[in-house]
Structure formats: structure tokens, C-alpha cells
Length: 547
Image (cartoon, rainbow, N blue to C red; front, side):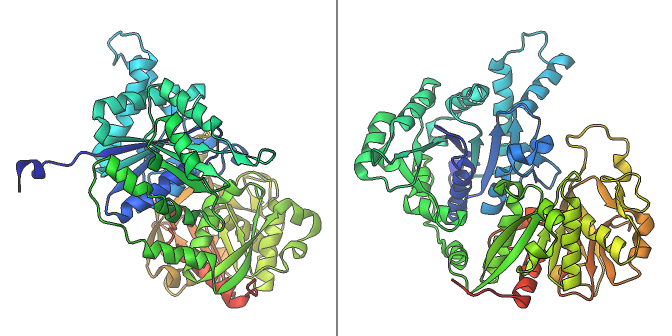
């Protein structure tokens, strides 16, 4: 072995930008490329740089930003990190998500400490250096073969300029063989003209070039096939090789088809060639089989998701994906019926839930729609319909049981009614003095001990588990013994026994509710055991004819 062979191989870097419009799917494109590169035997780490000034999305409304995705270390992050973890094998950390708010916070803290030795603090070099340091730190800590960094926002946004300047500098520092730029853009179809238009892409790339960045690959979102002459046109006007103009059409069935479509376009091969990487041809059979079970399942069931942000697809993104993983594992298609909890309050549970095979109530905050969720939980318990409660969904199930089985009249959560006679859900002890919203909940991975001879133990096949949390309230310890006098079981608790983490009802086909967020640990070919158990129970009790 030569001396050079013994030296550690340099990390390669891929930057993904977006142009023309927002919500083009940069995160899914980055995640899909990560999938393909992992199947080539490379260790891939993804990260997201968001130009907004919030320190993190933890205080943002789902109407603004979709769900908040939580990592093992408690970081509240952008939902794209959910795609990154689902599409690849890595577990990410707080260092894999950076916002302008974090950057300026760090720079100003250093300025106040005098770290800059009296220098004038400026965007260049201080802000751009902080951005570059985040990439170098991830490379040092996680030691990947490739880091894929998605730059949030759209080219031309003023708040994104420091990030793009940092990327330009980074490319200079590391050399062309080690850095690759991918630009995701839109080819709009004008029905009146009957053709796709490339001008927005040309102008988006021109803006990127004016900032000193030349994309190596262009991924074109399109509703129609891109002909060779159009690829040639984009190649000529954007200074990109024609074979590096990649088509990304809307997926007909599932986002999990995207890696297979990009593989057909040879995206991973082009990326590896550009970065001077020699890798084996990937065998995507496991992924192909997973996708095929989504597209052509042998069974089909209907599941109601009862929430308050139900019209927003991204508000419960990880839950829908975890259900998809479980369904594919069981060769079962899922028809998701989104039910607004306020509609149940107005018209009753039976009007919306009588035709479904199972009910899932996800997490959330605030009192809007709470009584409708309580009625949904009651409907599931009384009609023996499979029920799965997550975070708030567990608190809802506890309140319902306290009211209608234990006969604690007016039982409620301290979050919704501080003056209720029976506060069966109360504020966590360490939350009582908290006056800040951001990053102040019980966050990240915590240990739960599971009772033997329970449904939960049967699903996990383990007496100790770790799961990710994001909540402020808990089952009031004062009521734990009284709640368990019937057929409700606290089947999972914190190691010291003080916090109820899982409840279940014994005499029921499936009634399980958890304080944590199992959806964050589900992956395509490794569905979470609780989601798998829930979908299996729904399948056992009801099945729809395949269409």
C-alpha cells in the first residue's frame, strides 16, 4: 500500500440550490441523491442551511413552515431533515441544520466576548466564515465521504446571499474535484403556447453565475418530458454539459419513486464522475421492492387522522410517511381520511369516523378542536376501533378515559383549562418556570422502560427503548393509580417511574398512545414497530376492496 493510500480520503461536498420558485423539492432531490450514493457504498451526510432569521423553526406555526422535526439531541429543525433521515441511514444532529438566526447569534456572541480583537464585524469574512465552519465541523465530527448541503430559499432572495457567498468561497478553498453544485429549477408549461419554457431557468442560473457560482448539474422540475433539443438549449445557455441537464417529473404515486427516476437520469453517476469517485454500480432492488409495494399493494385500509392543521399536508408529514412505511411493509395500501377535529365538535364523531378502519390523533398545541379529538378517542375506545395516539393524542386519550370511564367530571389538561377540577394532564415540573417558547420543551431522545406482558412489549420486543420527545405536559402522577384501576395500563414509563410514556387498553384490538414521537424514527424498509402494529390491527379488523 502506497503512502497516498494510507492518507485519509478528502470529504467531497455537494451544494443544492433552488431557482425560479420555492417548494421545488430541493430537499427531496438532495435526499434522493443521498439514497443513490449510499447504495454505491458511500457514507453520506446531509445538512440544511435556512436563510430565515429564526434561530430554529420551533416557534413557527405549521401554517408557516409545516411540521417541526426533532433530532436525537433535541434540535428542532426543518422538515427536510426528516427526508434526509428517512432516505439515508444517518442520524443527524443540531449541526446538520443552520439558520441565519443561529449564524448571527454566534457572531454577535463572539463580538460581545471580544473574540474579534476589536475588528469591525462584517458579513465578509465573519458571517461567511461561520457558515463555512459549520460544514467543516460536520466533516470533522461525522467523517462522511460526501456532505450534501441544501441551501434553503430561492436564488435572488436577499437573505440567502451570505450563504451563497460562503459556498463560493468554500469551492475555491477545496478545489473543483471536491465540490459540486446542483441547481434545482422549474420548467413551466404554458398551455396556450403548448410548450415548456426555459427562460426562467436561464435567468435563475444567470443570477447564480453573477454571484460567482457555476452549477455543474441542473435538475429540472417539469410536468412534461424534456426533449433532447431542450436539454441542448439549457446546456448552451446555462454553460452546463447536456448530459448534466436532469429531468425530474412529478411522481405519480410516491416521493419514494424519485431516487429511481433520478437513477434513470444517471444523476449519481454524473455526480461521482464529477467528484472523481470510483464506486460500484448500485443494486437498488430493496428500494424498488419497497416502491412496488406502495404502488401495487395486495390489501387496502382506510385510516382517519384527526387534527387541527389537517388541510396542511406538511403539518403531519412524518406521520404520513411512517404510515406509508408500515403499509408497504405489510403490503397494504393506505387511504388517509383527513378529519378536522372542529368538524367532529359540530357534527359528532360518527359522521366522520364510522367508515374508517382506524383512528390516529397526532401531536399539537392549543385548545382549538380539543373536544372533537376527545370525542374521536371515545369513539375508538367504545367501538373497538384501532386507535393510535401520539403526544397530544396520548393526553387526549387519557382525558377521555378519565371523564368517561373513571367518571372524573370535567377532567382536562392544564394547557386547556387551568381551573378544571381534575387536571389529569399537567405541566412538567421543569417547565413551570420557563418563560421562553423556543427550545424549552422536553426535547430529544429519552429512555422508556416497558412493562412485560403488554402489547407495547410485544411490538418492541424490548424492555427498554429510546424515543424522541417534544412536549411540555404529562400525565399527572397524582392520577396514575386511579387511571389504572380499570383496563387502562401505563405500559411505558421513564426509568424513575415518574413520567407516563405509553398507555394502552387491554381489552381492545389496538388502543395504544405514546407521549413521544415514534414517526421520527421510521424508515422505508424499517417501519417503526408501533406504526406497524397499528396498521396490522387496522388490516386485521377491516380491509377495503382494491380499485
